[in-house]
Image (tube, rainbow, N blue to C red):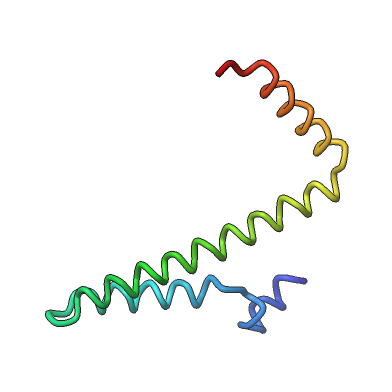
Length: 89
């Protein structure tokens, strides 16, 4: 996808814009005199959702990297096995 496509199509940009808008709304709502606890809980839930989404995308990216670079993935597995063999409990 070219950079021009990202500028033309806001849906192609991904979840970052929604996340920024959600973070701004959470901060603005938390400063009100009433409902601070509810806003804090909503922002915690939103933070957990964003974190879960990030971890899913990170896991997917690592799997993709392992598929595209099998030699590097195998070397990383071997290094991990060596670390586990030499680790003392």
